[in-house]
Length: 325
Ligand code: PGA
Image 1 (tube, rainbow, N blue to C red):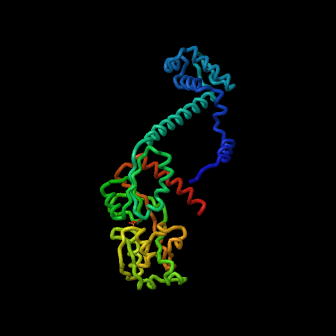
Image 2: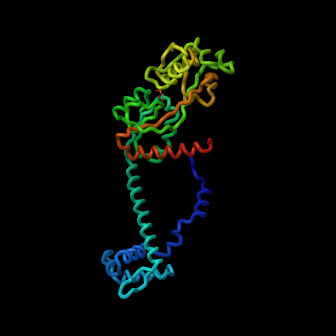
Image 3: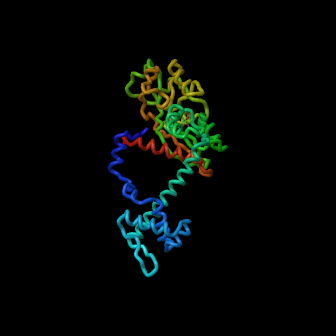
């Protein structure tokens, strides 16, 4: 996560004054009375609107003009008319008021994040990193109950159809639902073998070199399996599975045990797969470059927690992506 360190914070504080250092000569009460006098056209009207005595407002105007060293009004007959600088000050006070109202709106909205829930569905392969991505949001909003349902692709589609969750993370968003999507992370799919397999000594392989080997696949309904099958079909390669296993971990164990080769997301492997007895084979056309998307139904209104999480991820993944670019 991107964080400022202390020296950066104090440096920003020095080079970017807020302007309020100078404004502190005027009080908010004086400014409020002043703006009312300009807007309502007289001390009497302003005093009535603010439930103050007329002399109190007059004193506030005098003190304000004295502390700023500016003439804020000029008399025109019996009326008080603001000078040009007085008009400008009234505008500044209104802008401060608008900024404050904006803050209050945001604060009220953020109060809504004190308690609540957020349901997310995620395909199994994302379980290797999604909890890490959710971590900063979960820590910032401890009152939001996060429910993460981890299922295969077809089960996540069924959940989206029923509207069980607000957000879903998956590789292939279904076409038949009105979904907004945000591709948030690359999903490279690689072919793995046990480290002691003869093919691991080859520097280059074609997919057709592998088809004599037993192939292990995920269960029907898995997006990983669908991606592999599509890639084989697109290359005209006929490679029938020997065995289907219901999880990425089961596949890794089976590959390590020498039962066959498999196509899996690189994210399911540790940084150094050899430590787990696994090797990534250098097959032409692999890794398959696929994307994970966060999706949500466009025909439903996203809750504040869901929107906040999306904003949080967009900001953090963007910051993370920058140094690599
Ligand atoms: P899955 O995940 O193989 O667990 O279904 C892949 C995906 O659909 O992103």
